[in-house]
Image (cartoon, rainbow, N blue to C red):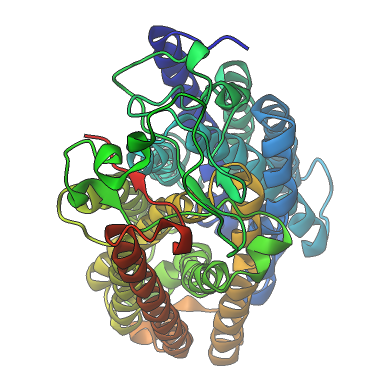
Length: 534
């Protein structure tokens, strides 16, 4: 297969990036439950626990389907997934709208939960199509590219909650039906755009060197064009590509001196591989091409999944309950409460969480890329800082007795949640390769719903126990739900411990790889370092 020109790859990547951002706009609608959930709960007479189960059902639909949609993204391509997202999002929000209006009758909360599962499935399908395509299209500055893609996942709730406040939460009674119909058409439109524009372009040829990879080492390949990368007859020297990433498949490394006949063996020496002639250009935080059971059995993959399981569950819990928290603080501190004003306050907090998530997702990729390239900051160390921010957010939100203080907790929770989901896909792709990224990322995220469900169910239990009549005006200073934040803080501290253990393991690996590489004991090295682009 002939390689595309540099110009063609650039424009295809740009078009695909726009499609990815469009797709994640659909994905972000999963976090909008707080903007319409309270109205649905009042119309269907749901308890706090039932509303929590309905809300978390969307997260279950999203996260438990991760391995399947990840596999589909790796094998079927992004167009199929985007098409499913378009149909699923339109059907789910239409069903919610007509349930609220009464056209579909007054179904049980279990049927409402089923609609929310479909919201989650559509969200995951669009998200996997976008993120998997982006990781396979970018190698240089991959962290920044992935962050831009997932940033729209966080920005979507911010924009749409303001849309709700400006156009649907007006008058004495919010227009929840119109808002849900608007979301159904939005999902249909954005996912259709994604289906037409997403495509896997790949990295293109190396600009640094061409080489054979000996038996036992696996090249990080993301497209069919990668098979041409080792063939000089197809090589095209460009200024926007990085060299191949190679790694040991399972801890049984082989020799590192295979070359093509007639090729200068000096091309395989450390000095030749370093574009600046010194060891500063070598990235010792190296990767393996793992997938399937080999990925599941890897201790570092397990630690990474544990950190995400514990900390992302906190974000899911907070997103799903911010409406109840704001109502409790507002109604208990106001003599003459206004339901529309309460809805606007909820939308404001959802917008702050969303904006924080957007900023976190947008900036963390650049932070990791620049920090790694210019200052040698380890990605695993940045993960520790991210998890610490999540713990701090729960301390602030749990201690808040006023809506002003809660606003700070909402902002930091959103920022930390964005940091987490901005850096995690990059870590999975950099440490474990892109060939099976979709499946790996799906397996890494699959259990988040369980931690979010547990924290949400505990919140509902605490709230219902303290407020049996569901009257938020009696919840002075957030006392009716504060115990739930004690648990979320504890979960965050466990995640921090797991992140520190992971960082220590990666640090030991980097130091050993550097010692072996600099000593040119290539036959003993566990992974082959790759070169950072200028």
